[in-house]
Amino acid sequence: MGLLSGKKAFIFGVANDRSIAWGIAKAFHAEGAELGFNFLGEALEKRVRPLAESVGAKLILPCDASKDDQIDDLYKKVGEAWGKFDILIHCIAFANKDELSGPFYNTSRAGFHLALDVSAYSLTAITRPAVPLLNEGGSIIALTYYGSEKVIPNYNVMGVAKAALECSVRYLAYDLGPKAIRVNAISAGPLKTLAASAVGGIKTMLNASEKMNPLKRNITQDEVGTTATYLASSWASGVTGEVLYVDAGANIVGMHFDEKKEEGPAKA
Image (cartoon, rainbow, N blue to C red; front, side):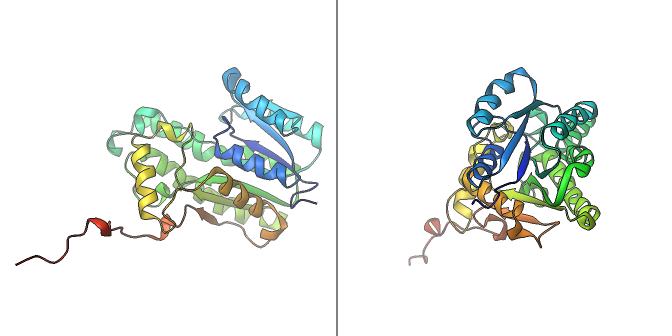
């Protein structure tokens, strides 16, 4: 018996096999969960469908999470197929690429609205119609990043969106607690994903994170997946409204020195 045996989980946001969302899907499948997935457009369907089918998923549905009518259509089909389900995963984020380089003050009004809508409001948008379908003891998990709290060069408007997402997690946790539905977020360290490739200087970010964090390495997709499994399971039954870091400890470091480059005492 796996940790999630008998559970049903719907996952928003798988883009390809390097997605953090796919790491979560693999971990859930290994622990016995039945999975459902969305896809956005034909191009992504060609990537998502084979992955979903490889873990036995039968619910593979089109949905743009910025469109309420498409969200409603998706949950109608989820209800018809599953009745109730247990776990909802939000791995949705987007900002225009030109907003993710250079100074933050160049963020356009339209770009700000787009990033906040897709990356933050979408959590509320996919949660509201899911609530009647979620079983008692249900779990909702969103993905975030440390750029919500501290300045990360080039992360820009996405940092603002992730801050709004984390705040949304807390309010949703408060609202849904009486229904025994928990809401949490995982703040994952940088990974080489399709979404990360849009951020200017992602290679520099990966190198810097590896040097500064206590474990002196970057995290893996699978480490986020196993953490999500914990949060989705009964083992985390008392945890809600939290942001759990899976970043090799980078968030605890205030300043990093490269000791190898430190100069020794001055010679006479």
